[in-house]
Length: 303
Image 1 (spheres, rainbow, N blue to C red):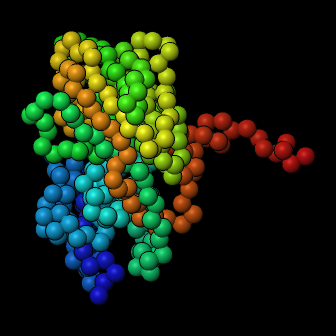
Image 2: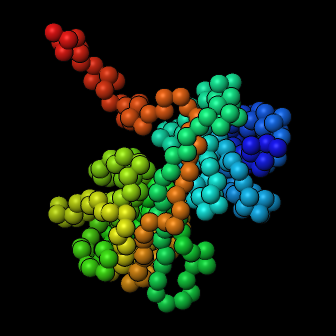
Image 3: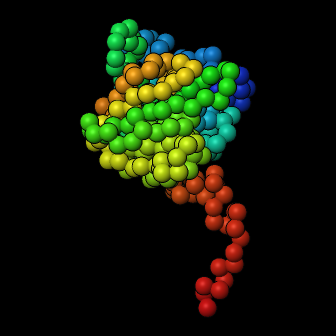
């Protein structure tokens, strides 16, 4: 019997290289006895409901071929089924969450089949809307990177006022473009662009980062993952506030409707087969740190 009886492969929609790699992976997995389902993933393609329905959620391995967006989609849909995700950058861009395409060559496949890999758990967040019915039917919403609460008016660049409470205590009323509530994994995504801190992904914490606040006193705050947040819109002149999960629309939010955000019940499980996998190497490469942006001579340190 195969070590991965049921495998699903999602490749980046519209990318020929990603599709070809998916077909190659499927063939290799079928040779070791795996049942494999393959489908595109993208803005207009969500294969995961079909994957889950076809397998009744009994998936032993998910392979995501694309960029970080592809990995985030896999995490939101599969983490609740305890599915390890092998995320490989084939046709993607940034690649903070993915491993390089070289891992799919012979050495990587040998390590995978020999179960010589590491499972790296990443905490997720979940959000639930309160208030008067009707409420969204697909609650709670989940994210691996961040929840974003912001207006989407087509007429003007509107601002909102959001009241933030932590464990029932009002902390601040933030006036600006919105709020980001992120995991450590998401600290290198939208949060870092909004001047939030970079946090090691193995920590359990929640970061609150205002987006373009109108007060200089509004700053990013890092909290323990055990805290429960409640965010309530107090001003929304255009009635256009939306809740976004990893950059994907979750639902509209009405004035005075509370949003409860907390650590999710289960983590994302990333399957790592890359040799000498390094989070700091990823930061150096993607953010152009040491020996890329600055090329100082270290020879003087040897004297």
